[in-house]
Image (tube, rainbow, N blue to C red; front, side):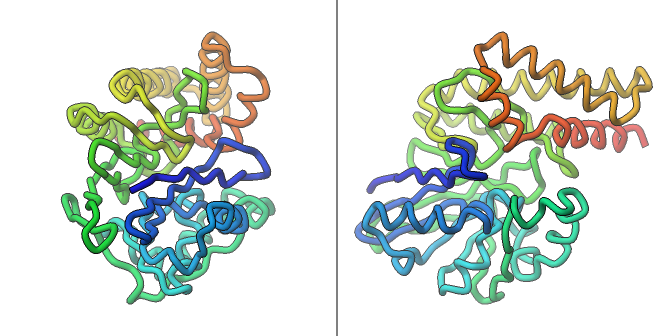
Length: 298
């Protein structure tokens, strides 16, 4: 069995969105599809490994945000079986509401950023519950689905032996850097659930994490310990901003300033900061945390 990392070169930029191909006895399983806009890069990456898209019969998506599952419908239409959280399935079959919501946010940038999201035939979508197992090949290893809310209520992580494919539940970390960017996009950032999910991963004692944003992490214990603290820190900081009566735009600006200062203190260059903002923008993250705080008060 081998795990291959495919860099999808989101917006022609390396190291932002990964998809993973697990090769087992000649069978291929794809974890994460990326958005429709990066489908050509994904297919090119497969071919560079001397694989064909026809060999991919199983596709697993951690959740239905467009950077993770935007191309899932295309794969389903090619005959692959797509596996997802129970709360995600209906949106893969009929992505109309998901697309409309995203278009309100991204407006005229929607198509260039995310490309096309095709509907998946219902019979090609299979729901995975917490603890469900999926064989990678006839006599090969199994992947176990873990329900891991906090970033989104429709979020799964996928456990493969001593490794875990974490989607967004372990945050974003550019390769070769230490700064951890908290993935807190609206509307379902929930810190208590998030911390519980991170704790579940930490207790498992994984040897490797595979982040969608981005790549392999070989220090999981330290990564998860630090990421847990980061979730608490950003939540407390934005909650304090809300308590102080700051408006949404001010909260975005203050969150961005704090994060940029922290990133700079950990060696993040201006170029890498722009890469981080492309994939996990601070304004979007501030909105997610602020909405969580406001909901808790209502």
